[in-house]
Image (cartoon, rainbow, N blue to C red):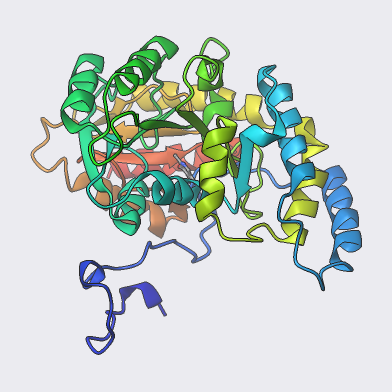
Length: 393
Ligand code: PMP
């Protein structure tokens, strides 16, 4: 039964703005090739599995008590992890963690959004941002990205920041669903505009917090920089990361943010107490001790991304080449040419054909586009084979 398609009874005093809405729909039906949710396709390595099991065994006996609410040890391990990844050192009091980066971002919206305030984002962007706005009563203002390139038009962005005077600016980098990367110089311009713009609906001295959602940053090429480099220049910058993607831990639910201790203190006001269970803390600490093994497939996924990109580039639908967007993430956004009269319906048709053949892709983003996650080599090959069959039909 699909519970998400059931309407909510009129006899419930549901908030007026939620009436008629449906919950987020996750696709839980088993499908052999799942290229829809941007997970790392490789299971947790055996060595790490044993370490995690051992750690849970010792943690579980203390589970009659509430968990350590301060989770200093976890935050220190996260600080070391960031150092291993980026060679940048942050103190544990610059870090906060939650059950996935979605939870962290909701906390940010609860603390810095609110009625009479706005959040600026660059669309198409991650599909949960509108929900964070809705749930925190923040107005969402979307600045469209450049058509078909999906980069941010910086002049337009700066102008929009000045006009909207938002309390939150959010940038996904690399962007989901487009895979495009915003370079440090452009991020700096956005941060500077935020620094120079008083926030509507706040104290005259208040300036927007700028969230860079780096969920997929570990898949970027080494020529691109992390926005953590800008942290010392901009006290209102918040970088959000997750263990759900490159780190292959989507099922564990652990996201974290790096920001000034002041911002972290603000987030602690809205955070639910004891949000990270004793078991989550034990599991994550054990796995972080094996970070290189957990990240072991990243280079292979990047090679496969290139391979997939090269193959997609040469495919055509009714003589029109696919629009394949260069990606710095573990997925690729692909579009049908707008010269095709029915280009907006084609992702839907392809999705249905793929599903019939055991492959799950995602219809998301700009009209006429779909997104495919990079899987294991044989999964990617299977996707290309089914795609060619569909094209030759
Ligand atoms: N940010 C982006 C851009 C995402 O695509 C996702 C997951 N799809 C998340 C954040 C949330 O990840 P999680 O809650 O698993 O950390």
